[in-house]
Image (cartoon, rainbow, N blue to C red; front, side):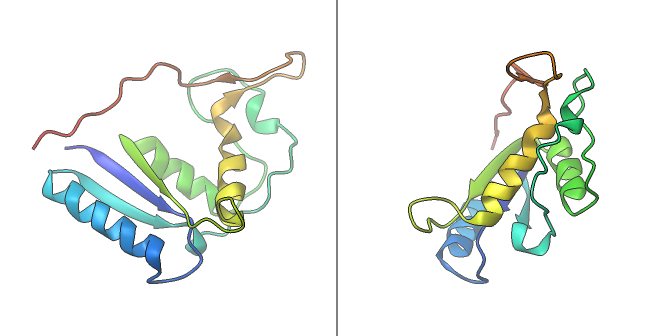
Length: 133
């Protein structure tokens, strides 16, 4: 059974984004997937400090952030999932600030030592899961 994370960056309970996510989740569950909804508004996520400490060590595992907030728990859930849904309302032409903060903190998935001009993804070319139902 595929484990899917629905990551919702909406600020408001019961809004259009929440409703859309719930409909998608219903369809995925009916197709045989196990789905967990993560409401970013329920996790304290600090701004990325751009210290790049989390990007300095090689390996496939995500780096360790110097901040100790709700992002660590989210990374653990991401690691156990087979697929993802990212949902956000559009505010002033972009995703919400909490979505942006979350996405910046995903830098833990990069290997970027100081002597290299650009990062490499830690998990390249992983196979995509398929749902069978």
